[in-house]
Length: 620
Image (cartoon, rainbow, N blue to C red; front, top):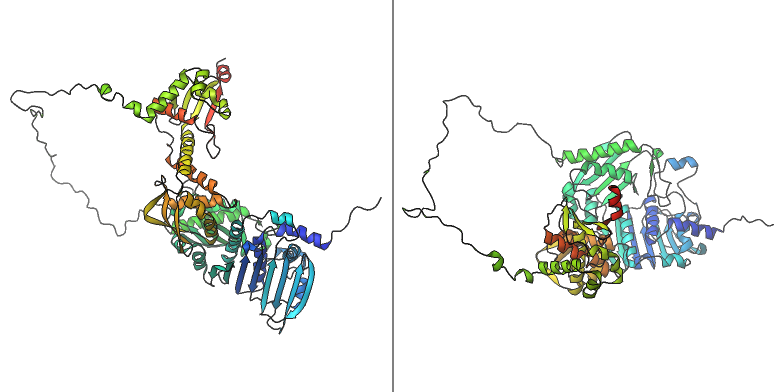
């Protein structure tokens, strides 16, 4: 029997490595820009075509490479940063494993032009699918110029799974944000299809944050600064009043490297616990410096997860630093007993006894006495029931309640003839044929008797379900109906959000939004869909952008659904609202006319049935 174990060819091994390191065009840009930073570049230019699917070009003014280094750089595990295993625990550079260039060259067509300052000529090397096609001496600027074309040209299955250009470009800009925020001393220029998206000069950290996220962010930032033997923490956290449900900018950086860390996220949010509404978030930009020997950055292929040796201690330091920043800038309410500068309050020193003021009134005065002979007026007798007779029959409340009551009182055959239901609703027939009596429990639930037992309806969720269907019908029937704003709202977005919004402009206009790009990542909201006047327009747009991220190109139905759900949740009755019998009857009747009465649009349960057998068993 022949041997079955064999070594993989380098080209196949590189493609396997690319599956871990190079997932999409954003991954290529991340690796190339990090190499430029490690090379000491002070200016980096990123040129992208078709969201990186056609070409990616990264140009830097770093130290460049020699002819030999340029060739070796594309070999697997070729690196200038590690010589022995102990170097893994003293890393201060971004890349170190030597897999990036080999992985990129395995799944794309790559051309590198590079030259060192001391060399007269540089080197141009072309590689396609791990195969070196040419290498020659050329005249070029010092530094490196990487050109990556036709990503995944030889792995069609991987290319097929790339998303729309808007989504991939949004991922690219998100990756670029993570890099430029930690290197404000380096200037960046980013262009897509010839349009300049970023021009970031070298500046301070606070100014870099404003250049990326807008000048309005400057008003929200509180400085964080603490230095201990274990960790040095710096950066900014946002004021509590700037909190929002989605879209907060939250970044952790360790030794100049972006990371995700849910445990430390809780440490930052813990001081805000009683300062912001439950479920909302605040922006933060936290930079930590730790001894490289106390962390491990090699536990994830993309190096976005880092393992710390002293996580609990750092958690306490981080939480204390944020709490100190909030307290220092008086964002945490406190009681100040300092009386300095306050006016003196004179003390009471005994004087003559004071008498209370007297009230003079006429005990014989009668407002109904108009003459010498007292005459009393009695209220006229009015038959209010007769006065309003017939009016209640015109109201929708009376009409829907009457229909619902008739459906509850007649037998099933008669009801189905008058009020036909679809097959999908037949499972709910028992719920619709109750005794007609409804009871409210704790101001939150409606109780009703059904044939199978006891039905419990969550009134808030039921109202959300009813209003959602109603708003969806209105939105679909009133395409393009817009309500102009007397004072337009200004919406400040990041470049990634701007890209997503541009792809949604037509869909949002179809439901009534009027948006104008006023430059610098700012949009003017001049009109909103009719019927949404009670909602905050900027927050509604942000929620739609967050939900649309990562979806396909046609998200019109998604936008409408999100808007209808936001409207329904805002307009629905709150828990604890007392309902009378007619209102409860109308609620139940309207609920069972909905397409899906059992659940809210976001999947929360509306109705619960306690079977009759279970009720009887409890009294057995």
